[in-house]
Length: 124
Image (tube, rainbow, N blue to C red):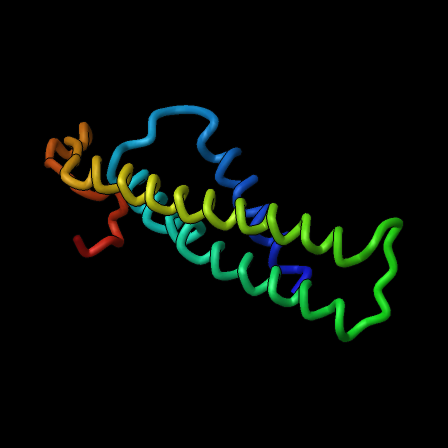
C-alpha cells in the first residue's frame, strides 16, 4: 500500500513541471481535469477506509504512543474526516472547471482547421 501514495505524489509533481510554462489550450486542460477530478471522487473513499483501518488497529495491535493511543487516533480521525470533505469539494470544483471549458476549441495555425482536441490520436 505504501508505494501507491508515492506514485500519486510523483504524478502531481510531474504535472507541476509540465504546466509551469507556456499556454495550455482548453481541450488539453479539459482532459487533464477529467483525470484529476477523480482524485476528489476517489480520495474520500480511501481516506474513510484508512480511518476505519486505523481505528480497528487499536483493537488488534499492542499500540503505543507518547499519549493515549485512542486520543491520537481520535484526533487523526477528526482530521482525516475534514480532509475527506475537502477532497470531495475539490472533485466537485475540478468537475465544474472542466464543464466551464467543455465547449472550447481552437484553430490550429498550421492547418487552419478548428480542432476541439489537440491530440491527433483522439478520435473526437
